[in-house]
Length: 560
Image (cartoon, rainbow, N blue to C red; front, side):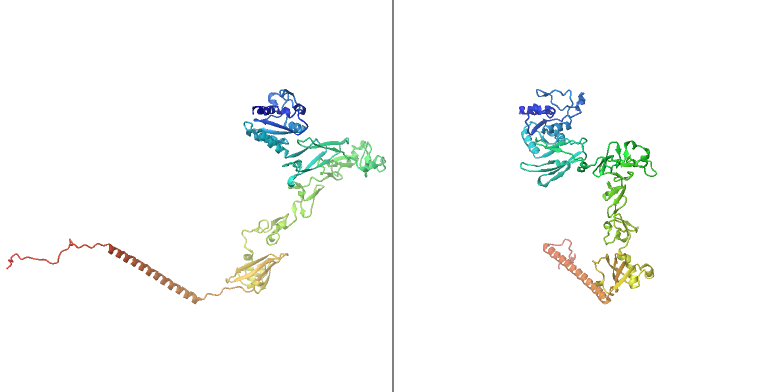
């Protein structure tokens, strides 16, 4: 165990050198390589050497003598990016075996170093073998593609087709995880050239999976000229008296000549006469400051974003300075032409942010904004101040449809009610139709929104009607011609019922009282019998008894 710990300690102390060293000094073969870095502390990186006065950046070379790094006093620590580069160049996969205390630090480092793993090392390093096995299994179950440095103007994109139908693009398209032996994954790689190299030479890029020696080499051959250029006509008359080669339908001017038809000399480019043709009326700006005046014509500037273009005779137009909505030019609902949005159908406004679709304004009764407002840009603008809400259906102080039209229906159908006197002035805003019974009233399911109403008139009779508004905005009322009036009460049954009720209640109370008295008497009699049985009768003379007989003896009587 002591020898094993010494090996890990040596690796820990020499990590910065090993990861940047040549493979020959370590003795690795040309295979996938694992480096186990074991420590119970943090790590240094570029810049920390300044604390000791060391400012020279690391040269990426190994300076080993007897397994000791000899240039620690001369070169600064390597940066993390430098370390990643060297690990990738030498096909090295790193396993960090660290104590629990520094797990969080090295997990953050793992996110910066592709094909690396972190394991928790016990205090006595007894689990180091299992840790390496687990980390290796984790590393071998993931494939990450990397490419060499791309030539200028060349971009590359990845799309992965992993297990279980998992597909990713952009940065995640470079890798597939949870792979086991025998699994097959695919990568789709697109290489795009946005510009031609200046000298037209071919370029080479390499793509390989991290941690493996195999790689794919792609030779890029740039096609920078059209086939029609080989068929060009030198010194063509079409190019202003032979001042250029006519190829692919355009003139390629000879040296010293410019212009669409090579009609101008470069000596005339800066003349004031030519500049006058490149100014708009009543303007001093040449080509609207968005281009150059060449041979009396504006040549508009090119922008870094090739989708953004200046246009127009004076470069006064562009397709990127239109009004925006939600961060998008023309709100994503139109095309920017000469700084003005041309909106797609069903959209309007300076930024095409106003929808002409009225569906969001549709109220529950099928009317736009409940007939109380106008639909503007997909939002209701309520014209009646009493109504509010997204579809102008909320009114805190309004009566319902039935209560609102109750008085007008009553006066027109039955010639009575509160508006009887003013009916012809206030209640002619709807068409009224009389029907014989409730069954003949319009029923739900018709195209026009419908409200069924039941109201009381001034005589406490119920009358029934429906209220609807058709697509032309006309209100229609159907009313049952005969109100339902309740019949008067029958007095005799009511009086008889009241008298019978009083008698029955009296009898019931009397019976209850009688029952209570019987119960009370029985309880008293039972109490008396009980006391009688418990009484003790003794024969004796009453001490307070005085006899009613008085005997008087005559003293003179001698008994003779």
